[in-house]
Length: 495
Image (tube, rainbow, N blue to C red; front, top):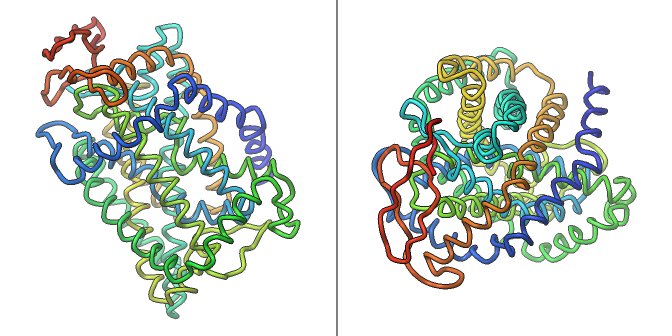
């Protein structure tokens, strides 16, 4: 099975897939005139307003809750264990390609969030968005089979990417922590821990998107802030090694053998590992975040797209880079050409801050992993709902809880391979949809810039109906501030 998965992995993440991911990212970047850079200051400002509570709304899912739900699904084991694995398999140069993937991913994530709000629908009082609705609403009925394919892989990924890998990394971290203090975790202990996680996931997922959003709003900022403080302390202590680490990242992207002593074979391997792990961590191009962002109450689709920029920036450019620099600056030997995970990250922190750092690191990882389970649980439910109807939601929390328990006994190598394979299969229809709807994306960006004056022109933003079930609409073209009046289509969506 391992050999078969390795063959499929190389096929999915071969040269065509890499060219598609990077190609669509570059295409959107030039088509939108690098909107992720032009609107980055505006995105930072909007995030600060939401973070300080000056832009909250009552009822429904707030923009900040949608962002936290999306971050909950992306900021997780990939940022800690995944980065360590990328360093070991692809060398330091893999981090360079993760940066490139992150820069392009900021534009991809803006597109996903914006289009998810633009093409979302209302079904039985629920506001639903995501790539399947972008495909079916934006590209027409003929493309619905592609939306169904995406949803099918989304259901599978919810149990792999969003559950099994998180449980595996969480148990590995707890096992290493207890083993470090001479109290090994027994198989029965792992099972009990899995059951506790399963029950908690079941309770929160059963509460729907709003309960998940409230939980993510509390978990993600606390876990991210704690990890940033811990990593910052390591870099302060080892500040002298930072320039050398950054040089090895840039040099290793194009000459990995010179940096790893020949243990990493080729620059193509480094590129493939960097891009695949980059997509795994920030999920840009997969479209999954659109299912969270699509429910947000905003006045304009691009307003939520700005939160997509910040999602990738915080996930890849900040947290992944922090993990990589901690490992490279710590002085511990990296097993180039082999496999590594959470144990390498934990050893790096312990090398600099002492054994007690393992406790804080394990706590942060547990919060990250649990939040990811919740975010992906919602994604799986949304995909299943698109395929089978709303009644399927009641079964998804139970299946997700069962997967948590099964995750305690699965092989870690097989779990990670399966997760990255499904990631690649999900990315294909999502990227096709983004490329095909690029004209509408550009129109929305121009409309937003014209009405807010953030890039060019002036005016004020045209506000939508601010109700708990407010949905996206095509912004009206009035030159003066008015309340747009969306027109309902027969299928429940709005224009």
